[in-house]
Length: 277
Image 1 (tube, rainbow, N blue to C red):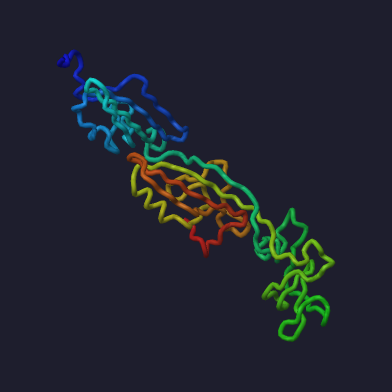
Image 2: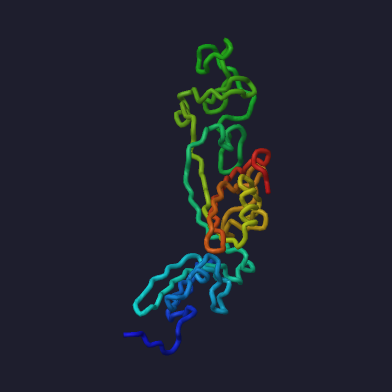
C-alpha cells in the first residue's frame, strides 16, 4: 500500500518541542535540540560542527556534535548539541574563569625557608640559622672538619662550610632536637585549576606563549584567569606571587576550551627566573 503524504513534508528539519538551554553561570551556554525530517534530507549541513542554531535568539550557539536516527514511515530524528558564549559575558568572546584551588604542604629544603638566613618578621621569633658571620667550632666538638679545619656554627646548631656561609652542612647540635638532623620542612603550596572558553584561535596562541610567566594581578595579558577572591600582588621580595604553570586546549564546537593551572607562592616567583607578563 502506497504512503499518503499530507501536511508538512518535513523537507527541512523541524524543531521539536522540549529543547533545552543550559548555562554554567560563567558564560558558557549549551543546548540540546531534537529535529524531525524526511529521510531524504541530507543532515550534513545541519549537523556539521560550527553550524549556527536556527532560533533567532540563540544564533550564537554553534553545533558541537549530533546524531541521526532513521525511523518508520521514512521519518528521521536528528539530535544536535550546541555550544556558545553568552554575549553578555565579555562581549561573547570569552567566558569568565571557572576556577578552584588546592592547598596543602610539600617538602622543601630547609635552606629555602624565608626565615632561614635572616629574620622574616612576625610571627617568626628569630631566624633559623642566623645571619653571617658564623663562629668557628672548637676542634673535635660538633662541626666536622672542612679543609682540615672545623666548620662554622650558627643558630640552633646550624653548621656552615665558611664564616660567611658557603655550603650548609646541616644541624649538628643535639641540644636543639627540634632541628637536629633535619634537612626539610613542610612548605605551604597552593595551585589553581581553571577553565575558560574563547571564540578564536589567536587567544589560544597568546595564552600558550604566556606559559611560565607571572603576574601581579589576576590577569595574563587581557585574560582574567584568577577569580577575584584569589591572593594577588607581590611576595616578600617584591616578586609576583602567581605563575601560569600549565595550559591545555581542545576544540569544543566552534569554541576553544582552555584548561590551565596557576601556582601560587607566598614568597613570590623570582622575576630573573620567571618572566613577568
